[in-house]
Image 1 (cartoon, one colour):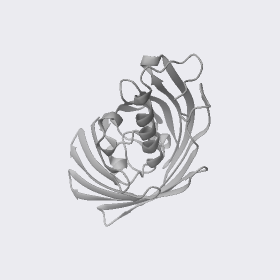
Image 2 (cartoon, one colour):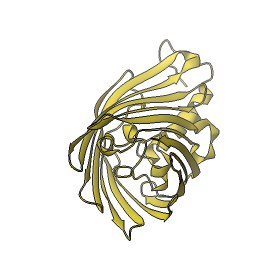
Image 3 (cartoon, rainbow, N blue to C red):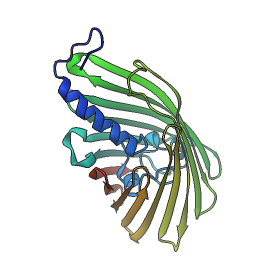
Length: 279
């Protein structure tokens, strides 16, 4: 391995496999590296769910939230410890809108990928909300004193047509900046659109299309079923690569615990957990 000028890699072997696996993980989840468990259980659908991580998923949903909340999440892609990711997010109502913040980190001590989102969503009209977010990230090799920071932004929209139908859209990374544009740490543009439909007073069906210019269209679908007053069951499916998922959500009044498992046929199982306090 030939190091760029002025870089001296003491342990180059640790960089190659972890960096490769991190890229595979990003590609498989549409570059939503730190999904909350609810989204993972629905096959990657996130545009119209009543989630607690709108800041880094769909900032357009912030304008329609009814409660402030703080969430902590953890996942271990493919059961590999080195790819484990942890995050904390919060969204806080401000009258006609809400502010969202999300901080995440992933990887080994020798190779880290960190992310920070600042988002704001505003209610434009009854049932219509739009939002925008700034995304700051850094890929680093601390032992080598090498850092690759970057920034981009996202735009989001969420529309509640009635009690049954909801629409959502998000444009991620239409433009951005990277300190090392020659390295593959930079993000790719993703345009996502989808809808959800409530039926039988207990179920919600989700469907979304995620378009990436370099890779084509990914289709996601999910089903949420209200098993009881405090329990939700979820399942989902996605293409490119093919994966399916399932999960459960337990509501303890002001506390919500979510658990999900996502299975990729080419690389295995990934567990997700999240704990949320809402008020």
